[in-house]
Length: 425
Image (cartoon, rainbow, N blue to C red):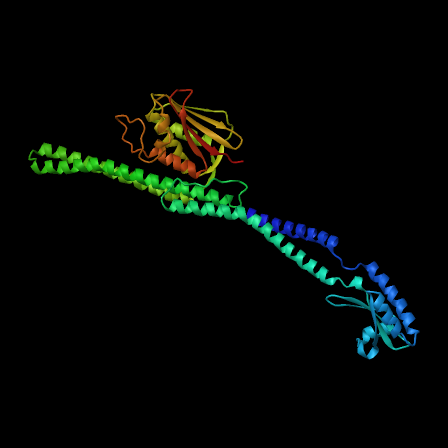
């Protein structure tokens, strides 16, 4: 919005100054208002006429002849018919000419001291004020029309972007969750449009996750529920104590499986809510990676760490970053054939954590799917997970302004999970 405010101020200043300057130039070019030199010339002429008429006893014949031969009319007025304020009358009676202007004329007046009368001199060339007034009106109208045009030119792209935003919001509300706005950095609403796209992506992801979770829960719960119903039916018909105990153990195992599934769902929900108020601190990634790898070594697994970074510090929550790394390491170990390697590469603004394994890898069309809840990759017989580890890792990465990419490892020829996190300056 700061860009919008700044552009409005700049447009208004440029429009006001630019159009005003242009109107001044036009007025100077077309205006017929008398110049100071012209007024001065007629003032001297009127002064000479006043001196000549003041010395004549009968000047009516001269005035009649003058008015019939010239467009510059003159007239003699009695002093009583020409009342003036005392401040002006003093200078006027001392010989100073008086210039009076009406809507359509400009007249010069002189005091005749001998006759105690006033000479009124109205040059025709000084009386074209109607045209000047019309020109002023036209130029004023042009000024405001130009200003309005500049504002409309400024408003047009803003209104257009608002209409696009409105249509996108309405389409999104009708269920088109994939609707996005094509943003431009020059747009006044770039921040709002980018935030709309981010919000839309978040909502689409939540709706998609909800569908996946509902489908997975219904599938994973249906099997133990069916076994429970079948086991209860068998228990009612079983009389052998040993067989009865075995069926009870199966029922208990099914209940434990359902309980584990519910706990996984609750943990995922709690994770998302707690990350809203994430407590970020500077975290040493090299130290954190060593801790996670040492924990795997204690479990009898060998993981090699390769790094050329002297320091790699990121801003994040240490607990959740450790959960992110552990989930990825567990996934790599479970799907490998005994070899896992971790690389840490530091660039100017971010670092890459590359986790390689020598397993079967991930098919290209499944690489984005396995980052969603309850989606599992190659399932081994002893793998009893629910497909939540990578989904949790992906969410933690997003909340730390990072990303996860899945590729084919060129070193171990299995899967490569590349985590990109922004480094502290």
